[in-house]
Image 1 (cartoon, rainbow, N blue to C red):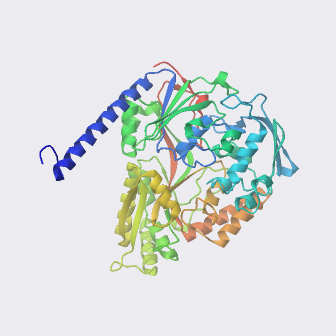
Image 2 (spheres, helix red, strand yellow):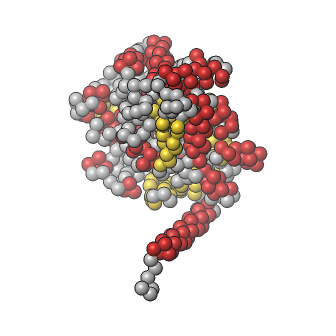
Image 3 (tube, one colour):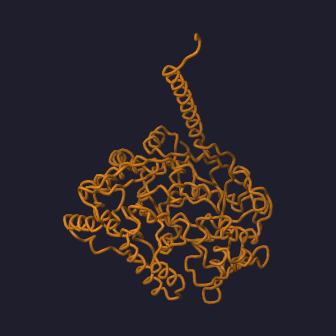
Length: 540
């Protein structure tokens, strides 16, 4: 029929229209980016994956945390150099041999809408965090609060927690056991207060009421998150930058291009393949620093081929040549990981297995022996999927590890790439995953934060690792009042876990940012936390 396209021609026409629309949108985005970058009072930040949420008690991703630290303020904070400092709380006192903490809030604190902010709002945020109805991935961080474990398990109501607002400006926290990292955890976005209106009626993201140095003004999915200075913030007079733009930048090569074009002031990272060029050309703007983060592959222990097959898991671990990944694939922007908990954590020694010191040939021979003991051979290769979220570096690492498993063991490996939110859902459901990319970034300078995500009851235990001995060691560490005993229990737990191999450590992170010369106040720190209120912008 005249005038109607059909079949292959129609598909081509639709594809052409979509391509034209996409090109137009990208052009508009570039123009918008250039206009933003031209504003001397707007800081533009590359932020990796699109945040899954900006609810402080529900968000778990690094990109969400970056934004939430601008929108909310904890009782404590982190200085530009990484030290714990007073924030909404002006001071505190430990009591009862470290089992109680009394915090005094600053006078005159207000929410971004001007309402008074009280100690009860912080208590409400912590109760919401531990309430099982919230399903927070960070609830267990605060399980040591009196009755915390019972509340998380649903055996007691959140009102039973050892939290009490003595008056509008004083919050008391009682603990079931010593919690040496409590002050650092109170700086975490998960410990943010919640406004009574938001508690009663969950708001739309752009209507949420915060208490940080900035307030949310716009969130366009997969495009931008815009923040404006919060005049109700108690220290607004010391805030120098008026506006912030966070841009999703999963494609690191595209992010680098935008940075070079002047559309970004700070990148979330750098593409490893461009590291040598960046060092030569932009060396003065490149910040590479020690960072408390582990990159590892999780193995789904609830389904084949890894359920009940420890020799196979060990074989795959020994077959990975970690130095090759750190030096050749990541261009010396990472450190090979033989342990899970990274070096540099306070009062802890990472547990390195004996085979890490073996020559490469001996590790490969042992990998093949374990592979055979697991029931596999060249005639009967294991079939494994490696699942990862969209990223050039994740893909390159997966390709290299698949090749190592093929070369050393003869494994048949398939790669599966997924969009971030789909990838997270599959990882947590544990129905479709086998081997999968995973990461843990420190929430505080403490080893237990790493160790406990592999507790059998932890909501972020995506491997489904369930070992009574490991759980018992973590509990003993949590209950220990002697720091030396606590450290010994945590180290024993890591040794046991590494032998069981529910995860395969690959490398330890370094933070990697390009920062424009006009950005003042930037300091590298082991948590890689940077509050925008501490930064300054000079003229272009």
